[in-house]
Length: 312
Image (tube, rainbow, N blue to C red; front, top):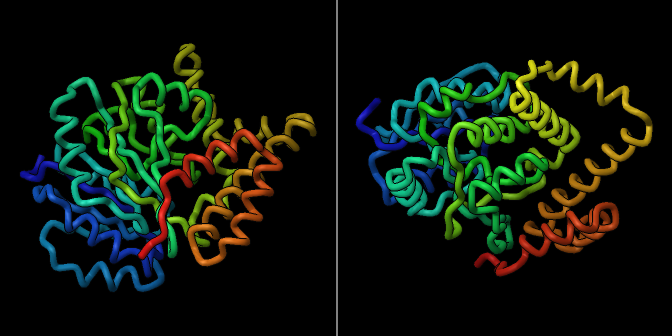
């Protein structure tokens, strides 16, 4: 372990123009004794040049060929030397007291292995209210088991050795590597989310999740299948086997899977437009999502918009 109290772990792939603001939000933390491990995952834009310009001694840049988020995070985790590791996405913002509050919480709660913080969405024109994520271990575990969004990946701080002990991130190039990790962490320790809002998730037209929703949902269901098998003492199956079973399911089940993915994708695309400068288009997409999945969309929109405000 290093003298740093926290390792901040970020993966960056073609992260301009949002990367500088994300980095500045980390370097401006009230907790000063941290190291900042940034993995450049084979970027082809201005990301490498920007990272090379950083002079803060707490920043360490690791480069690799493009391998996807999970691979980049595993690479970065191998370079983390502090007791705690905090995730950070390359287009988001951490509020100044985030690291200090989360580290203090882990110091005081030895039974907790991973702690998230409440978050809000923001875009070019708007900052939303708190997403009001589940707070207790029981609530988070239940949401994970049900395949719901339980904890914001990039908002978490965890015990570094615990993350390594449970196997870190899976090797698959799926966007739902966090759901699998949180299930395994919740089997080995307590998980919590604390307030107030200390992390802003940027939503924009290039946000990753909206494009790959079917892959996300499949990955989440695969993570749940692996957890069920662990709980029952059964051997795991590969993702290829799992995907084949889904692809050979009856037509009506495949249609429902597609409809669910399309509704969620429309929701995320609508959020991106709503927080940008295309509010009308965003509202139309949210209306489409609501018509396809009313319960899901209404609950999310209420959480997203409550307490929102314009950026000024």
